[in-house]
Length: 71
Image (cartoon, rainbow, N blue to C red):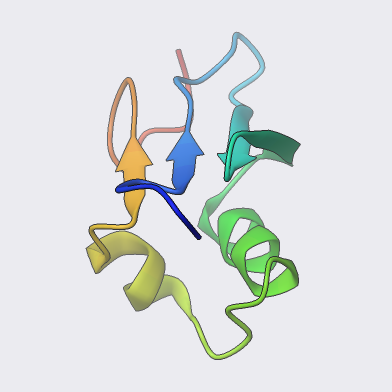
């Protein structure tokens, strides 16, 4: 992961889903924290869990933090 914030979780859409981008590539839509965990694990961080995703400076939360899932 080459950038300062290689994982970007975009603001919630009207359905509550948040698009997730890893290293500039969209990997899917997360509807909760566990979805973001699954995306980063698929990207190579298999040992990450919810706390890693919430606390890591590698993850940028746009439009609200990990507790925000509705617009």
